[in-house]
Length: 400
Image 1 (spheres, one colour):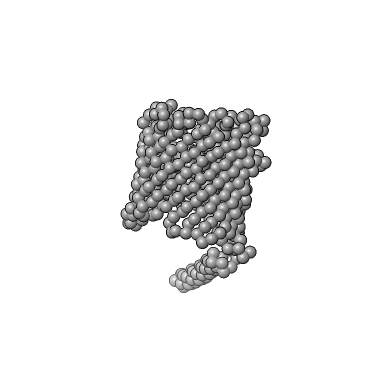
Image 2 (cartoon, helix red, strand yellow; image 1 turned 90 degrees about the vertical axis):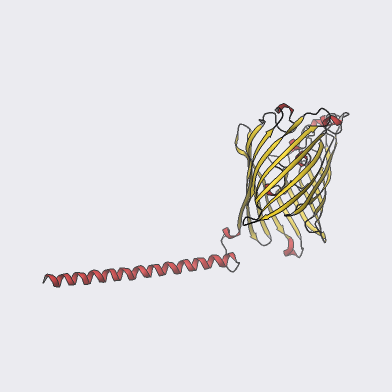
């Protein structure tokens, strides 16, 4: 009898596990079907075949760089660096995030948030919103190769101001001449039109907020759209030729209706004229050239009439050569030499005493096209008194 009950118990137990196993298999099959349906829906949305989620039209990018700078001369003879900076300095120079969104094929959003020097504390470091704008493609109106941007936008001046990700240029730091003359990085708020006017020729027109300077200093006059005066309007025009593959020629002009932020001192109009050439191939010979000049109309009541800032100029030449190393990372190495000069007080009687020249000897090693190791030797001096700085700089840069 006990054997009989044991057999019955085993039969019921086995039937329970068989039923449980069958239920489990059905649940697994149902889950697989749901996953396949979800994957199919995502693929359809990404390819435009169905209603896509917002995440399929939102993009994320960015860049960053770390610098080590070592000056061979005492700090107090430096020309362009702050007297509070150490001669031997390591700095997370900047970390930048891009966030973009495509509303549809004719309307996009773009933004750029930047942290400089790792953090912000006691007036040191910066957290900035450098770009935030809408871009409209007018093709839906039957107007081809024409775009309008609305918002806070990088100024279309020079080589570096719009394109300054570390893998795109030689040298650990950005070109000092463009920093001094074009106030890199410089952005303003307004409306920008870009249109193709002939084969290879593009015209950019930008109406925007203006500089605010009490002494004519262009770089310190950037308002960075922080509660900026909206009454001092300005405009920028650029004519660009890219009809020869790999080459870029541009002429540009910026007009400030009044960069004076102290009305009692009178109206100060200012005009920047300049141009550049850029050829930066991924392999072979490259060359960059830049020239720009500011002219300020300063009333006798304003300090720029006597401090020499009614005229400022800068120029540089930069030949380079880059070799492809190939390999699984698509590595390359390049060398460049830059000879530059500038004068931010060129209208003084003894203007030669303010003229500065700088030579940069540079080498870049691209681990991949979007990641680079850099080294340069800089030698910067005033023409007359010989004061200046020289030293070696190392850098790490990337973009994604």
